Image (cartoon, rainbow, N blue to C red; front, side, top):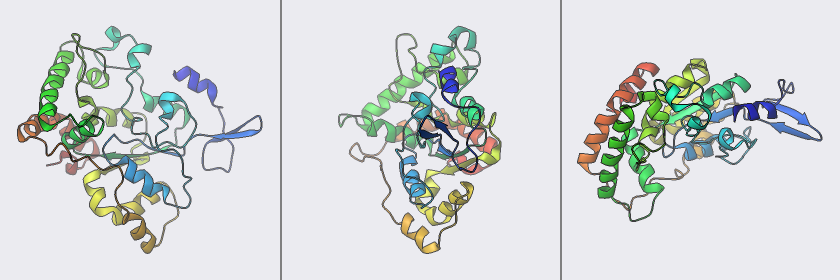
Length: 289
């Protein structure tokens, strides 16, 4: 996949244009100037909409999943940071199981676009998982079915740990002992993915947000986002207008709240990755206490 991508873009881009662009016959093709590389059900849709409200940002399809499907458009895909599920197709699992894929999407993007700005919005992984489970399923899903599927998927993950490293299991979505994940448990192992991106990109090219802060502090955070993306500042009245819009793509409520026993299990499962994330980012807020 990477070789095909490298063959489809030039080694040099046009000068004087913010986006990485090049001419191909009578067309001008461009790659994204920035990435919103967050996680599903962590606020990416709402953040993307409010970024796109800036008059210097071209409106585009939010989730082209460019680095999965190779469409050339601006990228707010909620898969970019973590979804390398085809890695076992390109790398031998037995040879890599002690560490996981030797290269991930971060390496590909950095090779082509080393100056990219990357926005990452995160959510308490326990809450993210439940919202993900309910949103991408039928109304037959309940808090009780979620609990049972969490137990089954933790068993699946522990079985993976018997044969591979924690990082390899975080990136793994294949069957273990004939079973697959029933919930997308691995997406919430944020520290694995964040560490991989920080291994190739300088820290000042990534901006990390929490959904819990974004919901209540949009007027304070949005100008910082624009500044990070090197966009012109907007008047406070315009910031207020943008932030007053109803949050997009909210969590579905029909299944009721998560069971307390499920929350205790998930909070314990994610404890280590939250501690590591808080250490990496030097911010205790990412413990989600």
